[in-house]
Length: 399
Image 1 (cartoon, rainbow, N blue to C red):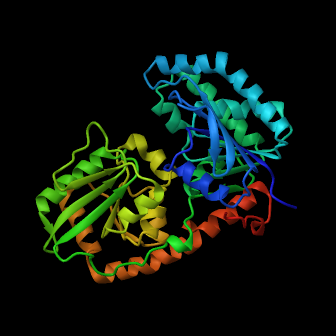
Image 2: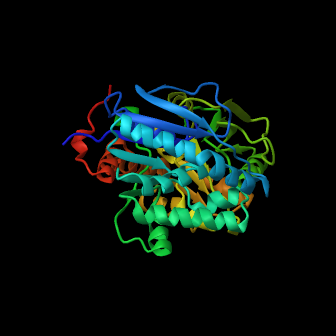
């Protein structure tokens, strides 16, 4: 049968970090070069208009975007009026010229949302979509006015109803879409899967005799929870007689997040570099926001960083609301400890549990099972194959 030639639609230029990027890169490695054509949109004016990504051609298109109230909706209108049609025409040209068999859209922005919606009316080529956040989150995050927000939601609903396949990031999101949009077909859970060769040995004991290293990687949205962790560490001073050091891999927030002297910032790193830094830790920190306005997001999102944490061999402190996708995941795979409070003593108690050998051993067993059944590469490839309608054995090329 062979693999279909794919047109991949993404927001943002190719880079070494991000949930969507991790998944697309993992899939692209199993495709022969030249069998994926990528079209990217970005709000930042790119230095280049295209190039080669994983041996495949890509093009970059600059679009107007703003998060400021009123201006954000104006920019959305501007995109639909002046940018969407040229982008759609170029996309249709690529489909014809490259003899594309399948469109795979990452619904991570207004540009991919509107473009995908328009494509459904303009081409017989089947479309599959991958979704990492619910549209309510994006619309709220962009501060859209009610009219623009309604247009987003209507476009999103139409895409769900007319796409050949839909993948989501969590079981909670799949359940929400079935209830919210009446979806009756199969909704695939597709998450970043890490190759077994990158699964590091789990350390049942602390790595250092004089300190305990807490690691965080990725984007920090849960600032109140992070600040509570800082207060808890300040209050405790030490855990199990060890001084505490916090390693932060990623872009540290400019505002409203405290960075004590024991926080070491490593900045943005590639995935291999992030994995290497995580391996030097003892405990991974996974915060989710407690505020009720984020309750739906907590139930439907899934932290891609968890794959990296477990592959790096770290037990995890989940710090967030009980009604959430991480709590559900930890219930099935007890890869660490859950702390559902901002109370400093409860946070410290969670860290102390993770410093104990027996808890770490139990977490190690669950961690291996989680990687084998949910967060490993073979799981991701099998589910992607089902999404695009091919046998998983077809996804063999790895360069």
